[in-house]
Length: 304
Image (cartoon, rainbow, N blue to C red; front, side):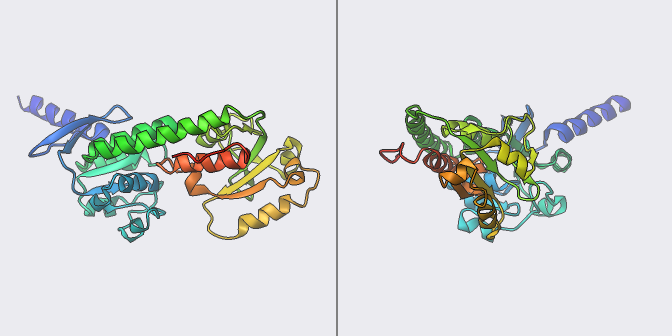
Protein backbone atom coordinates (compact mmCIF):
# COMPACT_ATOMS: atom_id res chain seq x y z
CA UNK A 1 0.00 0.00 0.00
CA UNK A 2 2.85 2.32 0.91
CA UNK A 3 4.60 1.59 -2.39
CA UNK A 4 1.41 2.39 -4.33
CA UNK A 5 1.13 5.72 -2.52
CA UNK A 6 4.74 6.56 -3.32
CA UNK A 7 4.17 5.59 -6.95
CA UNK A 8 1.18 7.92 -7.14
CA UNK A 9 3.22 10.80 -5.71
CA UNK A 10 5.98 10.13 -8.25
CA UNK A 11 3.51 10.21 -11.14
CA UNK A 12 1.97 13.46 -9.88
CA UNK A 13 5.37 15.13 -9.56
CA UNK A 14 6.39 13.95 -13.03
CA UNK A 15 3.16 15.29 -14.52
CA UNK A 16 3.71 18.64 -12.83
CA UNK A 17 7.30 18.77 -14.06
CA UNK A 18 6.53 18.14 -17.74
CA UNK A 19 3.12 19.70 -18.26
CA UNK A 20 2.63 22.07 -15.38
CA UNK A 21 -0.29 20.29 -13.74
CA UNK A 22 -0.63 22.11 -10.44
CA UNK A 23 -2.56 21.51 -7.27
CA UNK A 24 -4.78 24.55 -6.80
CA UNK A 25 -7.50 25.63 -4.44
CA UNK A 26 -10.60 27.52 -5.49
CA UNK A 27 -12.04 28.03 -8.97
CA UNK A 28 -9.77 26.99 -11.85
CA UNK A 29 -9.96 26.48 -15.59
CA UNK A 30 -8.15 23.97 -17.79
CA UNK A 31 -6.40 25.05 -20.99
CA UNK A 32 -4.30 23.12 -23.50
CA UNK A 33 -1.35 25.11 -24.84
CA UNK A 34 0.63 24.89 -28.06
CA UNK A 35 2.89 22.16 -26.68
CA UNK A 36 -0.11 19.96 -25.87
CA UNK A 37 0.19 20.43 -22.12
CA UNK A 38 -2.89 20.94 -19.98
CA UNK A 39 -2.55 23.98 -17.73
CA UNK A 40 -4.75 24.59 -14.69
CA UNK A 41 -5.24 28.32 -14.10
CA UNK A 42 -7.23 30.48 -11.71
CA UNK A 43 -10.45 31.81 -13.18
CA UNK A 44 -8.93 35.27 -13.01
CA UNK A 45 -5.12 35.35 -12.97
CA UNK A 46 -3.92 38.39 -11.02
CA UNK A 47 -0.13 38.12 -11.23
CA UNK A 48 1.22 37.36 -14.68
CA UNK A 49 4.86 37.14 -15.77
CA UNK A 50 5.58 37.62 -19.47
CA UNK A 51 8.61 35.73 -20.77
CA UNK A 52 8.98 37.61 -24.08
CA UNK A 53 8.65 41.23 -25.25
CA UNK A 54 6.04 40.15 -27.80
CA UNK A 55 3.85 38.64 -25.09
CA UNK A 56 4.18 41.80 -23.01
CA UNK A 57 2.95 43.84 -25.95
CA UNK A 58 0.02 41.49 -26.57
CA UNK A 59 -1.05 41.66 -22.92
CA UNK A 60 -1.04 45.47 -23.03
CA UNK A 61 -2.94 45.48 -26.33
CA UNK A 62 -5.67 43.47 -24.59
CA UNK A 63 -5.94 46.12 -21.89
CA UNK A 64 -4.49 43.79 -19.24
CA UNK A 65 -1.13 45.43 -18.58
CA UNK A 66 -2.08 45.95 -14.92
CA UNK A 67 -1.86 42.17 -14.42
CA UNK A 68 1.83 42.04 -15.31
CA UNK A 69 4.04 41.42 -12.28
CA UNK A 70 7.21 41.05 -14.34
CA UNK A 71 8.51 41.14 -17.91
CA UNK A 72 11.70 40.31 -19.78
CA UNK A 73 14.42 42.69 -20.87
CA UNK A 74 13.61 44.70 -24.03
CA UNK A 75 9.92 44.77 -23.15
CA UNK A 76 9.78 48.40 -24.20
CA UNK A 77 6.38 48.78 -25.84
CA UNK A 78 4.13 50.38 -24.86
CA UNK A 79 5.90 52.97 -22.72
CA UNK A 80 4.31 51.61 -19.50
CA UNK A 81 6.11 48.30 -20.02
CA UNK A 82 9.47 49.95 -19.32
CA UNK A 83 8.44 50.54 -15.68
CA UNK A 84 7.78 46.88 -14.84
CA UNK A 85 10.19 44.58 -12.92
CA UNK A 86 12.64 42.67 -15.13
CA UNK A 87 13.03 38.88 -14.99
CA UNK A 88 16.05 38.49 -17.26
CA UNK A 89 15.99 38.09 -21.03
CA UNK A 90 13.64 35.79 -22.90
CA UNK A 91 16.51 33.43 -23.72
CA UNK A 92 17.86 33.61 -20.13
CA UNK A 93 14.94 34.11 -17.74
CA UNK A 94 15.96 34.46 -14.08
CA UNK A 95 14.23 31.61 -12.29
CA UNK A 96 14.67 32.94 -8.76
CA UNK A 97 13.35 36.39 -9.69
CA UNK A 98 10.28 34.89 -11.32
CA UNK A 99 9.52 32.60 -8.38
CA UNK A 100 9.89 35.50 -5.93
CA UNK A 101 7.26 37.46 -7.85
CA UNK A 102 4.77 34.68 -6.99
CA UNK A 103 2.96 34.62 -10.34
CA UNK A 104 -0.21 32.63 -10.83
CA UNK A 105 0.56 32.47 -14.56
CA UNK A 106 3.68 32.66 -16.74
CA UNK A 107 3.24 33.23 -20.46
CA UNK A 108 6.02 31.66 -22.56
CA UNK A 109 6.98 31.29 -26.21
CA UNK A 110 7.78 27.87 -27.65
CA UNK A 111 10.77 29.00 -29.69
CA UNK A 112 12.95 31.23 -27.53
CA UNK A 113 12.31 30.44 -23.87
CA UNK A 114 14.59 27.63 -22.64
CA UNK A 115 12.68 24.38 -22.06
CA UNK A 116 14.72 23.71 -18.93
CA UNK A 117 13.57 26.97 -17.31
CA UNK A 118 9.96 26.30 -18.25
CA UNK A 119 10.14 22.83 -16.72
CA UNK A 120 11.68 24.18 -13.51
CA UNK A 121 8.94 26.81 -13.19
CA UNK A 122 6.35 24.06 -13.56
CA UNK A 123 8.15 22.01 -10.92
CA UNK A 124 7.64 24.93 -8.54
CA UNK A 125 3.91 24.66 -9.20
CA UNK A 126 3.77 27.81 -11.33
CA UNK A 127 1.39 27.41 -14.28
CA UNK A 128 3.12 28.09 -17.61
CA UNK A 129 1.12 28.53 -20.80
CA UNK A 130 3.16 28.40 -24.01
CA UNK A 131 2.20 30.05 -27.30
CA UNK A 132 3.90 29.64 -30.65
CA UNK A 133 3.46 32.73 -32.86
CA UNK A 134 5.59 31.54 -35.78
CA UNK A 135 3.66 33.20 -38.61
CA UNK A 136 0.90 35.71 -39.20
CA UNK A 137 -1.90 33.17 -38.77
CA UNK A 138 -0.43 31.84 -35.52
CA UNK A 139 0.03 35.40 -34.23
CA UNK A 140 -3.72 35.87 -34.57
CA UNK A 141 -4.28 32.59 -32.76
CA UNK A 142 -1.86 33.51 -29.96
CA UNK A 143 -3.67 36.81 -29.34
CA UNK A 144 -6.95 34.91 -29.01
CA UNK A 145 -5.36 32.33 -26.70
CA UNK A 146 -3.91 34.95 -24.37
CA UNK A 147 -7.20 36.84 -24.45
CA UNK A 148 -8.96 33.67 -23.31
CA UNK A 149 -6.53 33.19 -20.44
CA UNK A 150 -6.87 36.77 -19.20
CA UNK A 151 -10.64 37.15 -19.52
CA UNK A 152 -10.24 39.43 -22.53
CA UNK A 153 -11.94 37.41 -25.26
CA UNK A 154 -13.90 40.35 -26.62
CA UNK A 155 -10.79 42.54 -26.78
CA UNK A 156 -8.86 39.75 -28.54
CA UNK A 157 -11.70 39.29 -31.02
CA UNK A 158 -11.77 43.01 -31.82
CA UNK A 159 -8.00 43.14 -32.31
CA UNK A 160 -7.82 40.07 -34.54
CA UNK A 161 -10.79 41.18 -36.63
CA UNK A 162 -9.14 44.53 -37.28
CA UNK A 163 -5.87 42.79 -38.12
CA UNK A 164 -7.66 40.42 -40.53
CA UNK A 165 -9.32 43.37 -42.27
CA UNK A 166 -5.96 45.11 -42.71
CA UNK A 167 -4.35 41.88 -43.95
CA UNK A 168 -7.10 41.38 -46.52
CA UNK A 169 -6.56 44.94 -47.77
CA UNK A 170 -2.80 44.35 -48.14
CA UNK A 171 -3.38 41.00 -49.89
CA UNK A 172 -5.73 42.63 -52.41
CA UNK A 173 -3.22 45.37 -53.14
CA UNK A 174 -0.28 42.97 -53.52
CA UNK A 175 -2.30 40.82 -55.92
CA UNK A 176 -2.22 43.77 -58.35
CA UNK A 177 1.58 44.05 -58.30
CA UNK A 178 3.06 43.37 -61.75
CA UNK A 179 6.46 42.29 -60.44
CA UNK A 180 8.02 40.73 -57.33
CA UNK A 181 11.40 42.44 -56.80
CA UNK A 182 14.34 40.48 -55.43
CA UNK A 183 15.03 41.47 -51.82
CA UNK A 184 18.02 40.99 -49.54
CA UNK A 185 16.97 41.35 -45.92
CA UNK A 186 19.96 42.12 -43.69
CA UNK A 187 19.61 41.56 -39.94
CA UNK A 188 23.28 41.27 -38.98
CA UNK A 189 26.38 43.33 -39.77
CA UNK A 190 29.58 41.46 -39.02
CA UNK A 191 29.14 38.88 -40.30
CA UNK A 192 26.38 39.79 -42.72
CA UNK A 193 23.31 37.77 -41.73
CA UNK A 194 20.07 37.44 -43.69
CA UNK A 195 16.88 35.39 -43.45
CA UNK A 196 16.29 32.04 -45.12
CA UNK A 197 13.14 30.42 -46.44
CA UNK A 198 11.99 28.88 -43.18
CA UNK A 199 11.53 32.13 -41.25
CA UNK A 200 8.77 34.51 -40.29
CA UNK A 201 10.51 37.38 -42.11
CA UNK A 202 10.52 35.32 -45.30
CA UNK A 203 6.75 35.06 -44.96
CA UNK A 204 6.59 38.83 -44.48
CA UNK A 205 8.67 39.42 -47.65
CA UNK A 206 6.43 37.16 -49.72
CA UNK A 207 3.19 38.53 -48.36
CA UNK A 208 4.42 42.07 -49.04
CA UNK A 209 4.90 41.17 -52.70
CA UNK A 210 8.63 40.54 -52.80
CA UNK A 211 10.91 37.61 -53.52
CA UNK A 212 13.59 36.64 -51.02
CA UNK A 213 17.02 36.67 -52.68
CA UNK A 214 18.11 34.04 -50.15
CA UNK A 215 17.05 30.50 -50.99
CA UNK A 216 18.88 28.75 -48.17
CA UNK A 217 16.80 26.43 -45.93
CA UNK A 218 18.91 27.65 -43.00
CA UNK A 219 16.97 30.22 -40.97
CA UNK A 220 19.73 32.82 -40.69
CA UNK A 221 22.56 32.18 -43.17
CA UNK A 222 25.74 34.25 -43.28
CA UNK A 223 27.12 35.99 -46.35
CA UNK A 224 30.24 37.70 -47.58
CA UNK A 225 29.85 41.05 -49.31
CA UNK A 226 30.82 39.40 -52.60
CA UNK A 227 28.03 36.85 -52.22
CA UNK A 228 25.46 39.59 -51.68
CA UNK A 229 26.71 41.45 -54.75
CA UNK A 230 26.36 38.22 -56.75
CA UNK A 231 22.72 37.91 -55.67
CA UNK A 232 22.07 41.33 -57.27
CA UNK A 233 19.09 42.27 -55.08
CA UNK A 234 16.75 44.96 -56.38
CA UNK A 235 15.99 46.10 -52.83
CA UNK A 236 18.08 45.87 -49.66
CA UNK A 237 16.28 46.19 -46.33
CA UNK A 238 18.46 46.64 -43.28
CA UNK A 239 17.03 46.05 -39.84
CA UNK A 240 18.24 45.30 -36.35
CA UNK A 241 17.45 45.67 -32.66
CA UNK A 242 20.56 47.88 -32.42
CA UNK A 243 19.63 51.33 -31.18
CA UNK A 244 22.37 53.39 -32.81
CA UNK A 245 23.48 54.77 -36.16
CA UNK A 246 25.55 51.76 -37.22
CA UNK A 247 23.01 50.59 -39.80
CA UNK A 248 23.07 53.97 -41.53
CA UNK A 249 26.80 53.36 -41.91
CA UNK A 250 26.06 49.95 -43.43
CA UNK A 251 23.63 51.58 -45.86
CA UNK A 252 26.34 53.98 -47.04
CA UNK A 253 28.73 51.05 -47.50
CA UNK A 254 26.27 49.33 -49.83
CA UNK A 255 25.75 52.60 -51.70
CA UNK A 256 29.45 52.57 -52.61
CA UNK A 257 28.72 49.72 -55.07
CA UNK A 258 27.09 51.47 -58.06
CA UNK A 259 26.66 48.22 -60.00
CA UNK A 260 24.23 46.88 -57.39
CA UNK A 261 20.64 47.10 -58.70
CA UNK A 262 19.38 48.35 -55.31
CA UNK A 263 21.92 51.19 -55.49
CA UNK A 264 21.03 52.12 -59.07
CA UNK A 265 17.40 52.63 -58.09
CA UNK A 266 18.19 54.06 -54.62
CA UNK A 267 16.23 51.31 -52.91
CA UNK A 268 18.21 50.62 -49.74
CA UNK A 269 16.10 51.09 -46.62
CA UNK A 270 16.85 51.04 -42.88
CA UNK A 271 13.79 50.07 -40.84
CA UNK A 272 12.78 49.48 -37.21
CA UNK A 273 13.03 45.79 -36.40
CA UNK A 274 10.38 45.76 -33.66
CA UNK A 275 7.52 46.59 -35.97
CA UNK A 276 8.56 43.87 -38.42
CA UNK A 277 9.69 40.85 -36.44
CA UNK A 278 7.80 41.01 -33.14
CA UNK A 279 4.77 38.70 -33.36
CA UNK A 280 2.25 41.22 -32.01
CA UNK A 281 -0.74 43.20 -33.33
CA UNK A 282 1.75 45.74 -34.73
CA UNK A 283 3.00 43.15 -37.20
CA UNK A 284 0.25 44.25 -39.60
CA UNK A 285 1.61 47.78 -39.48
CA UNK A 286 5.04 46.31 -40.21
CA UNK A 287 3.66 44.39 -43.18
CA UNK A 288 1.98 47.53 -44.53
CA UNK A 289 5.27 49.43 -44.17
CA UNK A 290 7.21 46.66 -45.90
CA UNK A 291 4.67 46.47 -48.72
CA UNK A 292 4.88 50.24 -49.24
CA UNK A 293 8.69 50.00 -49.46
CA UNK A 294 8.53 47.20 -52.01
CA UNK A 295 5.61 48.65 -54.00
CA UNK A 296 5.52 52.39 -53.28
CA UNK A 297 2.87 53.14 -55.93
CA UNK A 298 0.58 50.28 -55.00
CA UNK A 299 -1.54 51.74 -52.22
CA UNK A 300 -4.24 54.14 -53.38
CA UNK A 301 -5.88 54.19 -49.98
CA UNK A 302 -4.90 53.52 -46.42
CA UNK A 303 -5.98 50.24 -44.76
CA UNK A 304 -8.47 50.85 -41.93
